[in-house]
Length: 221
Image (tube, rainbow, N blue to C red):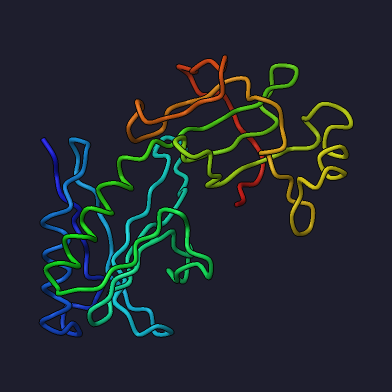
């Protein structure tokens, strides 16, 4: 049985126009989810774009880690959806390949938004893990249908000797030394976190783990 997304108004109960209320209600009612549990989202306001934001946060419950915020910005006769900034809930400057951008009536926009949320909630999320001397030195959460990084961790002290320097030399680094795990060889194992397993495209030969070991280090995008 599918359950809908439940949006909490986050203190905006008295501030929404009838059109905004209708959009939120229709989007929630029509956005069936693939699991047996409801998905809870929030409604907020983006003052920069003067848009209503309806969003959900997907995470790894076992690790108590937030992975990605997804949402739509509704203003007038237009709705845009994409990955959101984790704190500001703003849209990215460069839209993702799976971004939503539609115009129409409130009913049409609610329908498009509900379909978009349902599609995004079905996307598989996996955790890839790299081991050295039986310890996890790197890990990466991905949308497993596109290999898009959600967040990652790399601990140089636990990694094979010289590997970090090689990754940096090859350009697999951002900012002040944030190693990009996409430059690593195939992971040693993976864990399915959520979404449709059948839609996942996993590296060949990588085994699925049934138990989660310790993963240390700082998580970053």
